[in-house]
Image (cartoon, rainbow, N blue to C red):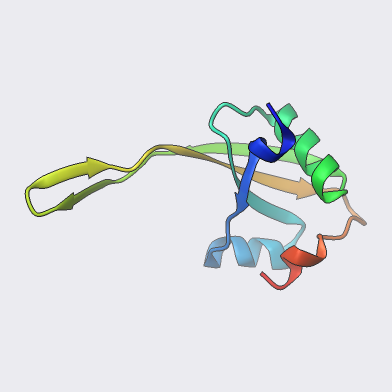
Length: 96
């Protein structure tokens, strides 16, 4: 799997913004079949920051309906990446 396929996008929510401000934790949406080693390698190569810990969580897709028709969003995976002390967040993630 390519490094650019492992990391889909950074998650920017109210909860992840406070996590980023408090410490060195950044949250990403990642590929469903990516493991912690793949995520660590991708972050270190693409962002140039050393990673101390990676935690992952599977998120179930929600049921959505429009009238009588029911659909389901797909499941997805997110990764909580903690950077080592002294490491700086990339510039494009600072303002986000």
